[in-house]
Length: 327
Image 1: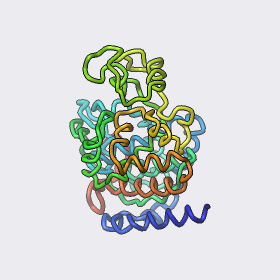
Image 2: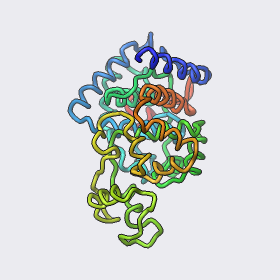
Image 3: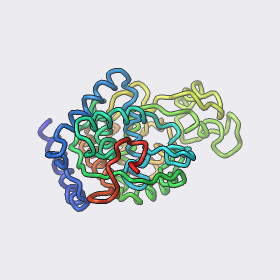
């Protein structure tokens, strides 16, 4: 079983290797300039997740949000004096873990000054967030450089939880991701939590009537009532709900079981059942019989996403601190 999984991973990763090479990203980019970088990042990750395992989901999400806007250039990490950076935009106001990323970057800087980009640090953090949550491991192609711009209104490129299948495929295609990547990467929702306001319209305002009977008919009724018991109204801005109830700290295939039963938390989760290809993928992996296959798919899609329009070579810079540009 293990050898079969390794073979699948190798075949899928080979399919994206050529693209990564063209973008000047490669797995041994820091083999001479900072050979300890992955050990440094992992040491910080092990320490953090042993104290707060629920941080894994937000750290994975941060990498997603970085790559979908301007490519994987660390722009989501930048501060703005006038509060007009990506992190200030509504879709990113619930991101957390910025302070931790700075801590990891400081540790990397101590080991290898002015060498490793914040974008690469974030890519490694995301990989370890998955792996340390009992998910797949993959070798991260490295060599990204950090961008110097971060603009709040460019977060329109982020796939919102309210999106239907057409919108989702368009936004994924903009970063060279296809329908398979969409269904595979959506399963990142197997770890972490969400605020009620990201989905409460499905419970109280599905057609704009703003009343308790205005519900999303595609939600499984018992699950809907359970969500209503946690999210009392459209105005609940603080309550957190597990995206994968019962195993939200473990990276597994339970997400697909939930979606197949119409218990996906977001519109975007339910949208996977509206397309024949993504529905078939959900139903196949809802059986739980193909975990190795899904893990290999997730690793390949993460590498593909991580190759979204990176700055390489002499482009961009290597930030000393992830929240501010060097000059």
